[in-house]
Image 1: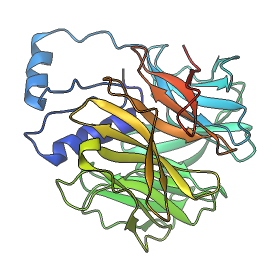
Image 2: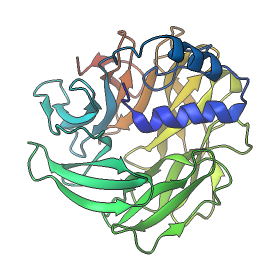
Image 3: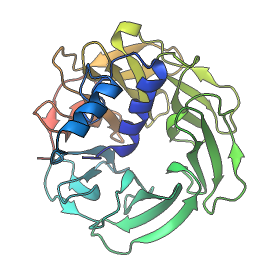
Image 4: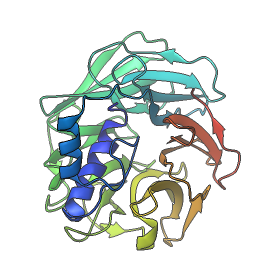
Length: 323
């Protein structure tokens, strides 16, 4: 399956960029098996038939009112957009297309869900009602993973290659585009702060460095690294702002242990704590905050396939939402 397409591709490229001789880890949906080199995987694919993709659900996005969770799933064959109540009831499929919908997010009034579709290096951003009606295109930009600003007037998106990524900010029609990173390295998983003044993203300091989370002003100024996770824990990515803008929920992927955890990082102090610690080879990833700041939605394959889960910000109360 190509569920969690953006995060999966980003991590694959990150592993390549670390060093060609490194072994690849399972990250975001387990599309690559830990311990396989790229050449070994290619040889295996050439010798064996392509397996049927596993049915998976993920990339949760909690509505601003906390009542619903949007997510993507390939249960219909390709990644489509779904919505479900936060208690796991009333699941509804919103799109039925051959294209792969990704990057779900919400309008401020919780009435519509936004998602993007990438076609020929151009991302089209759509809005759709929670009943699957009134789908319309609201933006188009020459790049990937567009994220709408809190005031609904600007987009941040990525352009360039996966290893030399430029973060761009523009209006909804792609005009007045401003490059806010130099494009010399990676800049992925970009998310706006609640006040729209800052952007958090995944980056690194050196070409072969470990992934880390950075924060900068929306014009690209005052960039600084906010995560300093021990190397043995893994690389930090997928930063999502808490409702009060003081913390980031992130995922940290361990190449050695073949696991991923959700962490919470204090932006001002840099203190970080791991949630729901485990040593089993499963992945907890792609966090999304509830508006009260007390819970997180995330994707996990702890049951054998990727589904949407919810837990408290202290790691307790883990509960599966989709099935």
